[in-house]
Length: 352
Image (tube, rainbow, N blue to C red; front, side, top):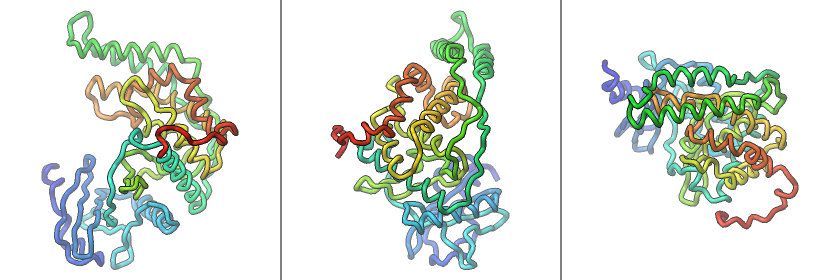
């Protein structure tokens, strides 16, 4: 069956009868990633979300279900999967796995749409999730070795990309722009080659959401988060790394303005109120996040050469801004951990 036909196909007959949700009235396909299918299912009992796994990793999926069910029971805005009549949350049919969730309302909002107070509340929510994950899951073994990408490897990749771009006036204006952007990245890699973070770092580690960003958050009419989605990315790693990575994705502008550091500080301040880290860990995570973006050429391949994959690190334009503002970002992310900042009044115009 062609992929397009498979994507539009209905769930297997009789599948939905395995949950006690009444007879389905409609199963409408929803947009999903390549090779993935999901549906909005309407029944007399309500509306549900059905997710298909073509080749489910049973152990991983069931662990995710255990975690999300526990977070839901703890009162956090996380959707627990619904158990089928047989008591299972992962149901198999025709060699594929299926999971059913309650449908969640609300809408998506970009991080730059949020007021400072909402940014702070969102950071606190991530901190509460981290605290609950620590409490509800087994301790994660501290890893002393966090591999660091090498600038020389990234520079070599950029040189290879440059060889594929027409030069000397033989190409289009876009080719000229591509060559300029690639040379800019090569120059940054050369200039900052001595700023590589260490391979060995000691930091607080734990279970992490894995992809805490605007695409996985739903908001209600009052601006509160109604659901944190995207738990397929559940992983382990440094907690500070998730805080910094989430802030960088949520509050990055799509142009030369870089990061909205006022919103970043509100977000980190909220996390600080709910989860114990320290300024040193945050600054170390900022250093590493910047370096990984500097060495990640996937966004350049995607933007200028049309190749798939962006590396999940946001716009390539952020790298030049962050490199020029490295000291400023290190200080800004760590500011919520200082006594002066903690005692400062919340008088910013975006509070409210």
